[in-house]
Amino acid sequence: STSAGASPTASPTTTSLDHYWMPFTANRYFKTHPKLVTKAEGSYVTFADGRKAFDCLSGLWCSPLGHAHPKLVETVKRQAETVDFCAPFQIANPWAHQLAGKIAGMAPAGMNRVFFTNSGSEAVDTALKIAMAYHRLRGEAGRTRFIGRERGYHGVGFGGISVGGLGPNRKMFSPLTLPGVDHLPHTHNLKEMAFTRGQPTWGAHLADELERIVALHDASNIAAVIVEPFAGSTGILVPPVGYLQRLREICTKHGILLIFDEVISGFGRLGSNFGAQHYGVTPDLMTFAKQVTNGVIPMGGVIAKQEIYDTFMTGPEHAIEFSHGYTYSGHPMAAAVGLTVLDLMQQDGLIQRAAEMAPVIEDAFHSLKGEPGILDIRNAGLSAAVELEPIAGKPGLRALNLFEAAIDEGQLFRAAGDTLAVAPPYLVSKDEIGRMVDTIRKLVRKC
Ligand code: PLP
Image (tube, rainbow, N blue to C red; front, side, top):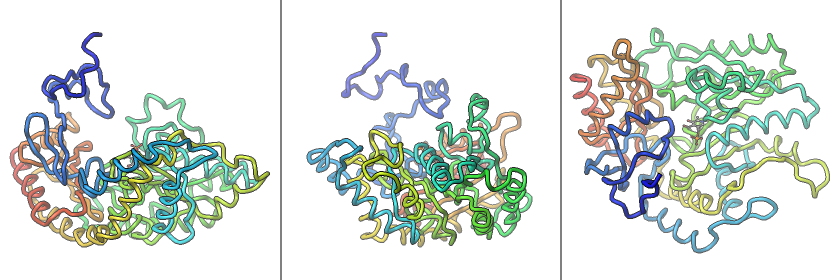
């Protein structure tokens, strides 16, 4: 078509919306309700129509330092002039090695080998492959099965949707999802835990389902269990007290690897470096993405226990030990930005700051209890969710209406199903949290 390819200087108001097939978006709805972000600065985004809103979810859980941070702008410029790209196989850039060291220093003791990817989805597929290959290298080639969890989100690769527990993401591809995957039950139960502050006390027993699955298949066939320490994408589902510990015990007992998908919980969202430290449970592999580069340049990765890495380091020294990797693994731009992000988190005490603001967000959001049509309020670290009663026969519409109306009030929420989620930048103020809650209070009374 001839309308393609508007020049970079074209005005947002004349930008054609015809050609971009948007991800996880109601494309036809978007074209009638366009929302183009034309400026992002600090904790605020501005739309082409002039509306400005607080970025309640830090982008998509990925910009805890806010937008256009001067130090990150400077890093991108400097790195583009220094080494903008170098091949990732057989040669390397120093920034990727430095960042791996920095990440290892933040991870739980013994988790100190880092494999880079470009996204959370790639990180999940990489972790599953490492787990399967590790067992094979140790002479347990039968360990090929994986166990995920209902309502888990592990990205959209075939591996990720297989261990993930979201029906809509799986149904078109059901015949091609990985064979040999079971799912633990999810831990969300409104009757037992609605309006719990932080971790529910009910539900640790749901981890015992793992014993049932192990008994069914035999441990000798199972490679790994993968869960999010707290599930972010499906509306902030917080692990019951003792649940992750129980999973760890059962995995250890049966020689099954435990993978934490820390794409959302990694790098401070819970007020600790990783969910592993926050909940006091050390897995064998952890995935990360999003916050490591503040969303400025895509990057993800897997952190492995040294023992897992060492298992691969056999065979002739000149031979590749793990036939896996991406053209953009350890991309120098991403690695340099990651180094600056993690330096800033440390120098400015930002993870500590997230920890300090966690009780503020908890108190503020739980003050909404009793407002009309709110089924549940949940919080984990510096994040919170409000689950709304759906409009009968139209799931998701109530949260969508609220999301739209909130932009007029200067708040950009995230609607996941009928749940509104927030995970603000770590420097969020008490007033800014107050304004988010005031907006929800006002809108649930009328939407
Ligand atoms: N894993 C978890 C826990 C996530 O929340 C996400 C994204 O939200 C992913 C994996 C997928 O990451 P990406 O969208 O970068 O592929």
